[in-house]
Image (tube, rainbow, N blue to C red; front, side, top):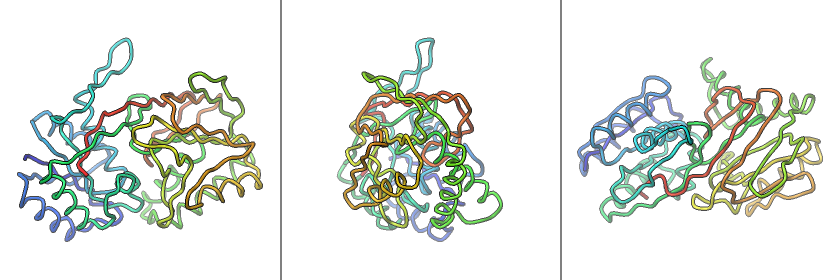
Length: 318
């Protein structure tokens, strides 16, 4: 099988020695090429080129940002844009597949798939799945022309992502502690001047004056120091998108909500909580531009975003 190993050398837990060990293990069973990414968007470009050249498997070694780029490269060749919108051919047994070796800090997508957290163990699991010809189809979310695998957001969480990206550009580590401190400071800022969003889902009246909105493609929404943060425990890769939103940012609401988000089973609810675990589409509008993030990648600001669920669009070796 022809395969491409895409490595992000800047990923939190990826080292040259670890990369070489994993590449050697994969090359023992695959006809393997190795690419180290050098700039933002490199993984998506290289994956799309490899698929066009007939590659059958792309292995992503890195964090969720690397996985997101590889996924966008994999799906690109089956996506068609015309005057009626964007159409994509569903995946099948012959579609080039994705495999993920976790090399970042959270690795939400890999963990939601049930992959081992240790890169060596994950590589062994991939090789075992390939030998057994085992894979599964998963659905993705799409916002504008960009695909996402596990979560997206407009406003608060995207502002956190943007701030952490700036810190990383200055050479500071994107640690769980930094995310927590940044999340708190952004919450304080937004509580003083809360955004106002309108949320629309099919079959329901628009909800106005929403202050915080998350969109998920699976459960959990993310991980914090190994603990699952669960906004929509009923979400799954095969059930459409999930919406979690808050109508108020007061301390009682936030404290009550956090208690549910960090509970083992999770089940966030309350009079200020707006939640749907399986919808085909979520549209979020705002009079002022708000930051947008997909899979932890800041994509600038928007005033109107439509998040769409596309089922069975990605084949994953697990």
